[in-house]
Length: 389
Image (cartoon, rainbow, N blue to C red; front, side, top):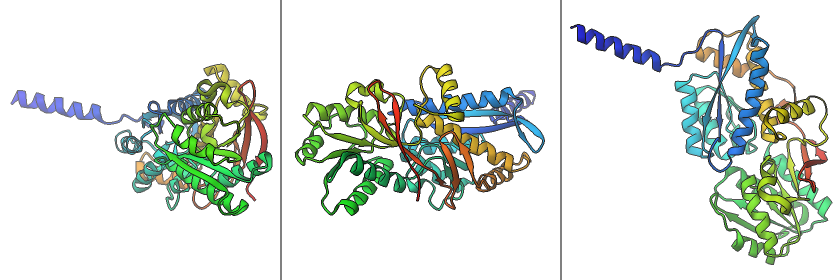
């Protein structure tokens, strides 16, 4: 009998230890980010920005909600830049870690399926970087801090037509990436509507793990486009551009916000200098709160923060504003999660370091885009700002 009682107590203690210990004065937020896989710099940027923000708030005594201060606890789950891992990470954060809200995933390839999980479970998710409309479409629990591809596509088209005097274009995109495929199709449709049917002279795809793009690039170069649009992640761009140059292509490229990693120039080097891409903010020449964020981040981590870092800062602050708007935390998980969703939905406008924004009925921000040029020293320099009409 004594042995049975001892066994019961041991099992009970084990179960208690397995449960997430959340202090009554702690706010737990999850981050579903790619710390390994194809785009680890994206995950690093998100984590670094979040840690800097958490240190600020906890260093000031915590986040004040309803007259009480709460310390922030951030839990980082690695989604390996895979859709299935993003779903697993979301479920762990929701069910085991019992977070109040989730920041991320960043890439649309992971954000779209993870968004469905969060919406089904009644947990706020905000993606810093995803631009695919499906991430938030008809999902009242899912928000984002980035502009959408239906806005980004025309920005790229109009800039290229004006700046390159382009009458034809080619597109190379990742067929298995929701973001890349969706933006490629939007770009093609907008360009052909503007310049006429057949003005996109090549529309080539590749796989996420591909390293050799010579077959696609040979077809593209043979079509003699005025420029090539590449809505790919920075690690793929760093392979595509040098390979195109080796094949003799001397023309222009236009990129998208997935180019904006701090690691792009480390991987691509001189071949990417002078190129343009649309993105969420420009670090070079920034002022005010944006410059303060950049200077602090660079001093702390040793490099200029990319758009992912800046968007993560904004996305996390949106969540914290939603928590404060809730008025109080009851300690009842479902009730508090619902109050936070309502608190974010109540935000009429938000001044972020990536620009001012207001949210529409889909949880998407209405905000401006920036076009940058990569300078001869490798900096992302502001060229122009384009705002929704």
